[in-house]
Amino acid sequence: MPELSVVDTATGLFMGNANIRPLSLTVFGQPVSWTLKKYKRILLKHRIDNDVQTDLTLHEDSVVD
Image (cartoon, rainbow, N blue to C red; front, side):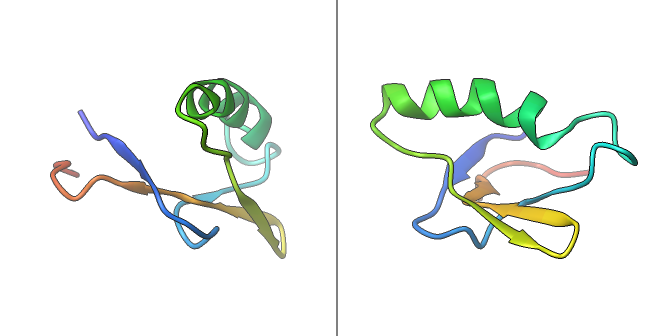
């Protein structure tokens, strides 16, 4: 199962528009924000056109199909 890592700037994974994807940024981001808060981190987001880029990346040891 892929694991997420946090980077210092919003240059990681993109989250898209809720109109075309079943997982909106709000649905994804809220539980992630709560989890990161426990580790004194903040979910950073940067809007680029209709997408939002986050400060989350796949951990280097994750296997991606």
